[in-house]
Structure formats: structure tokens, C-alpha cells
Length: 360
Image (cartoon, rainbow, N blue to C red; front, side, top):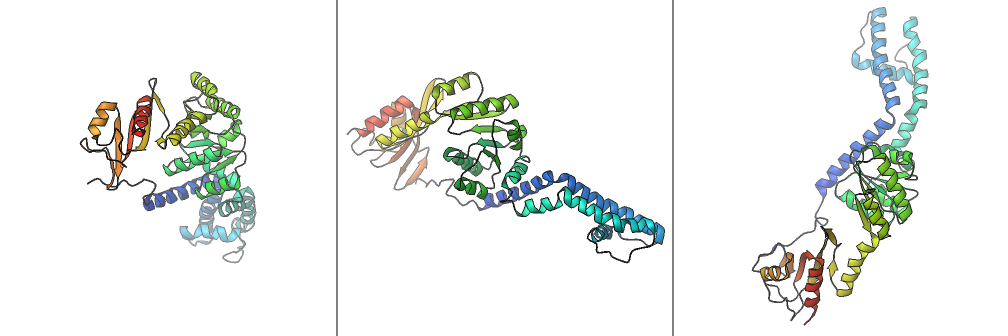
């Protein structure tokens, strides 16, 4: 019996979601540590190193041993003006009573207060938080443009488990909310600027996707990215097919997707009542994947999968009916009226099969 086909997106993703949350939390911690590494390092040196020195002085002067685990806590008490005992008369020890509060004020000025504000108020500091987060990524994807197309690209990349950073001059409220839910860092700025690209982590990125609606901007950004990184993969969206061909010809990008080329098969398929995917060009030939329904009384009704593949020089990928859907159906399975069939073949063969299927 054919087995039902279940969509990857329809299956529960509890495990992957938990894993994603853990990874996101670790990434957030790395971002905070990177952004405030100097103040944190200074704080550790003062509490741990200062505590050790204070304990050794205390033992040498008074002959009493302070446990190592208690020494950093004593430093914290002195910073916060909560002395653990009366001010000692010994000058080396009393110096800690006066120096540590000053050091605490300096540390706060260096970033401790800013650290807490950025951690607990990420939404209010989204620009800075996004840059800090993106700088921790490795081999990630940078997407330019958070419009309708860009946002869908980001969602798909996120669902694939990839780390993504977005560059945009100013996403609308809906896009910002979607990106916030996915914890996608957003860098507000002009992507033609090297500083903006650096904030997005271009140095460590693996792919750069340019998908704004402005061909000129896409071209300029692609040229800038290629200038900075000759080894990164660049994918560009263009409206002008001629411009796209020239971009590929001069090796400015690795792949160009024309909005017109992407939309044309979908419109043509809709006109025929079928679904046509993007046409693939392989060694000069165009191939497509098409889903259609076997028409009653048509030439395909009653044919087996093997007969259809041999006669039309195509590959039957899936056959679905009331009993379920089956990928790579058996060669002897017969096609009946109402069956949904997915085929892959050269584009001219696909169109020919679909056209004859429509005729009674």
C-alpha cells in the first residue's frame, strides 16, 4: 500500500526547537562576552586577583588565613561599601577600603551598567545587540533587504538551521517583529559601507544574498562584497535579465535570480491549472518539475509509470491518490483519472506532456 507523505514543515519540531533555543542562548552569551570583554576581564582581575593579594597581605600582617573562595566576595563587599569588618589600621589593608570603591565606579563607567542594560533591554538596543550578535557568527548567511522577498529568504534559511544576519536601512514593523521572534540580528545601515558589512560579520560569512528591489543597489553591494571577499558566495536578485547575465559574466556573483524568470513559470502553470517550479538550466538545457492531475479520458489514463517514463523520456517523482502519496512509485503502477502526478524532465517535454493530458 502506498504510504502517506508528510511535509517536513508539518512535522513537530520540538527537538530541533529546543536545540535552536539552546544554540540561540549560547550565541547571546558569546555576543555579550565579545561586546563587553574588556570590562568583564577587568572585573575578574580586580575581584579574583585583588582578592588573592588582599588575602596574602592579611595573612602576612595579621597571621590569619582567609579561604580562597571568600576572597573575591570580600572584594565585592568593599566595592559596594559593605565592609566585612571595621577598617583595619594597617596601611596596606586600609588601601583596599578606599581603592576598590573607586575601581568599582570605573568599571561601571567602562560598561558594567551598559552590559546589564543591553542584556535586559535587547529590544530597545536592537541595533547594537544585532551587531554584537552577528559578530559571533561563523560561516553564516548575510541577507541584504528585509522586504517581502528578503523576509521569506530569511525564514527559509532559519528553518534550515542556518545562522542569518540581515542588513536593512529600516525594516517595517511587521518585518522587525518577525525577525525578533526568530532572534535574527538586524544591522541598520547602508550595505555599500564597509563598516556596515563588518558589523554583519562579513569577514566570517559563507554566503551573501542580495535581494532588494533595486537592481542598481544590488549591483553596487555585490561589487563591494566581492571587493572585500573574493571567496564568498554571492547570490543576487535582479529584475533586468541583461544586467544579471553581465554580473555572472564578469564573475561578480555566483548565482543570479531574475524575478521575471522566477515568476514566468508560475504564471504559465497557473494558466494551465498546474504547478511549475523554477526552471533549471543544466548544460544549456532547461528542466522543470511539474505537478498535474491526470484528466479523465486523457492519453495518460491507464498508462503505467514505466510506460510514461519510457515514452516521454521523463522521471515520475510522485503519484498521489485517495490511498496516499508515494515517492518514486513502482514501475507497474497505473495512472488513474484524478491521480496527482509530479514529473521531472526537460522543459519542452514537460509542456508537451501537460498539453496532451489536457486534451480528451
